[in-house]
Length: 464
Ligand SMILES: Cc1ncc(COP(=O)(O)O)c(C=O)c1O
Image (cartoon, rainbow, N blue to C red):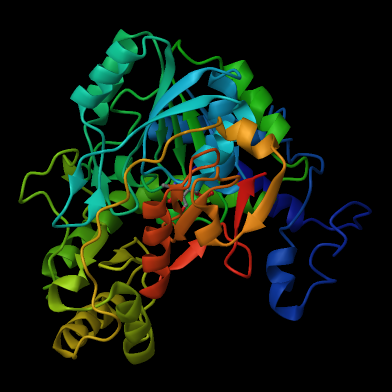
């Protein structure tokens, strides 16, 4: 395997000598015993280890190999998750006051990136899949119509795949964006693995996206927080992206994270396809006793599903998703990725073993045979799209105060409020808080969900 950064880090870490540099644990010696081995490799920009903000040697080589692997023109290593890549791509492509078109079901990091860039969002609600109680992707027609109404749109952003594993017509949307002369930015936090197996949906880069962010740590054998930003084509100013990353990333990036990215990429190139074939076989052999999200019934905005993402509707057998998650952990020692009122989501990855799949099978069987627990879930379409009263940045800069949810009706939200996970905001910074939104948030809470963006007393920040 070709792993220039991984090799350089091992060589420096295993060399003799005394280090009079950061970090303060002196090659692991000062750390808790459990961390000492890992700490030997937790180095800083020593000789032969290059520099992430102006890479010339081993980091540059590792990034170039990553670009080859994912088929991009340029790839940057990220050490603060996909979040920092999303912020950088918004800063690099949009000026204050510019308009960006994006689906309503985006992760909160995107709205936070809009606060940084000063751009104004035009949100489109993807078609509502009522049986599944989910939104998937935007349709090409929605994007076309939005350009007709707003010829000034400067960029389009889509999610590929969603947290629930749904992939929309990213290729079609890329064509529309490019026809209008603007780039397609993709939050592919959940899609780092797609390019490593021909039976998985295409990677967003292969669909023509101009900038793509991958949370390597979500679906590859890589350390938490390690992520990638990829760019291709002439619509992107790569120098500006590098500038944005210098602005946003630490000057002390973790070599553990960066070397883990280098190794994960090389491992996936060498063994990923075979390992993913095993995952896909295991998925086919799972007899899930609940409905699973798939494309057997055509749905607007859902072209394909990532088969390594198992999204089940536990409400079909009367289970509340939050209660089902607790039950599976207590009774079967299964940690799922995410629960909602209706769903459980499991990520199947290349490090899973037959024992894990067997445990999942018996856990799901037992869940299906148990009397459902928790408040019975009911169908609850999302509240109507709130009115944007201020841009995300203007609302962020506004003085604010905390009020109860009931008192907040009619006021303007000073921050995002999300059901967490998946971290998709119900309310964005700068939007009017309607009675329906408050009802929706209170219902989610009463059914066992958690909300992100309220204070410890359950109060909400509003523009004062
Ligand atoms: C769709 C989506 N985008 C972006 C992110 C942020 O990724 P990270 O946690 O790597 O910063 C997440 C995190 O869950 C996500 O679900």
